Amino acid sequence: MVKNIGAMLLVGLVIIILSISYRCENNNINAREVAITIDDLPTLSHGILSKKDQIEYFNRILSILDEYQITSMGFVVGSLIDEHEIGLLYDFCSKGHIIGNHTYSHFDLNKTDPFVYCNDIIKGWESVSGFQCADKYFRYPMLHRGDEKHKKDTVFNFLMKSDYIIVPVTIDSDETSYNISFVRAFTQGDMTKADSIGKEYMAHMIKQTNYYDSLATVNNNGQIPHILLLHMNFINSYYLDDLLDWYISQGWNFTTVTEAMEHPFYTKKDRYVGKRGISFVERIF
Image 1 (cartoon, rainbow, N blue to C red):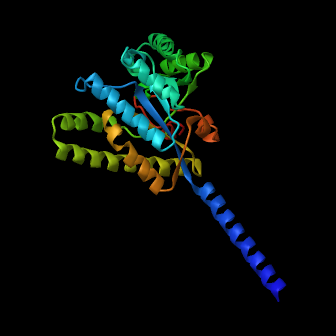
Image 2: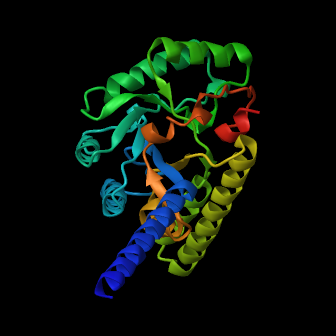
Image 3: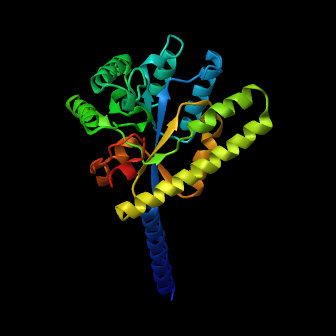
């Protein structure tokens, strides 16, 4: 009788373990993933924020990423680096993040000669190559890849010959439209307005995420690991933790750009030629 009870308990334990294992495997299969990328490092003042304010908000974002154990990729505009902010980029590296090239002058390729643009990419790399976490990842400013085929092909071929990896965006947040109004409200002490803008920002980010996730799932016949576009700006230093909490509450996991881009989706050809800066999800069709 004792042996039978022992056998029954052992069978029950095995069933429980298998059930837990199955649920965990299912969760991993179904979990959505997002990599965090941040454009326009080191910081932006918009002609409003002091250098002290900029350094403080950079450090807030760095602390939030650290708290959530996220490894991000930041794209640096070389002309924004000054003697006060070199240390910020070293701190960024020390936390395990990766620095990529966002050009030196943040030119709009739609309005720039492609050869001038390529020279600016070279200058941008020269400004960041000394940082230990810098690597040849590239992000087009404003996501503009060229409004003419010749222009697009010239820059693309240059990047390929220079051994760059172009880092696309699948969730185009376009959150900069909320940042300046938030900065103005905050610095003027109008916290009611600042809070209202913050709520609008969160609603916008959720809407953009859901839209591009649905579009990618339909276009790809299945889920993909996403790459989210954010900016190193003031509003994100106050709402990034809320945004990350929302992702977690919806069952998302955080990944890295390098891991995300191992997915076959990112080998698809960019077919779009035009003035718009659009998500890679829209560029491949």
